[in-house]
Image (cartoon, rainbow, N blue to C red; front, side, top):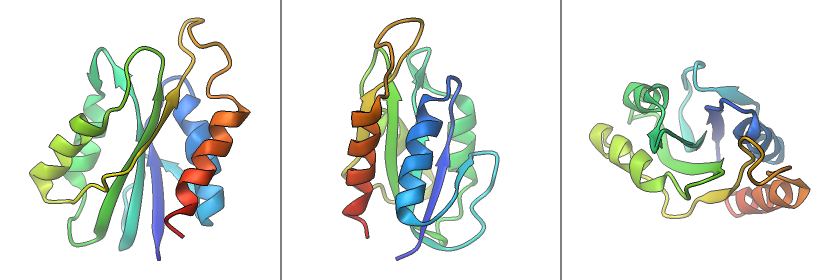
Length: 135
């Protein structure tokens, strides 16, 4: 299996998850400003809600993906107020014909003092455990 990990973060929470997941998969976690040039079986995409939606940069990144190079997109992220971004990301992936895995990882993230310290070590361990199922 081949993997790539990309993330978008404003607070650093999703980056922490991405780095732990990528280490387990034996790849480097990169920001979405880095294109996916190689063919991969799974692209793990980390993101969160900003103003009740996924960031326009995440939408643009998904739109830029080559469906011939991506086997499946796996969503992950953290958020203080809202839950999963799965439906929002899937809507963008469907536009370019990239299938989404039905599983995802999501945990709480700290924002302006809400959920202080999250993602914590337990959340990071859960993220690592999540990616092990893809190995």
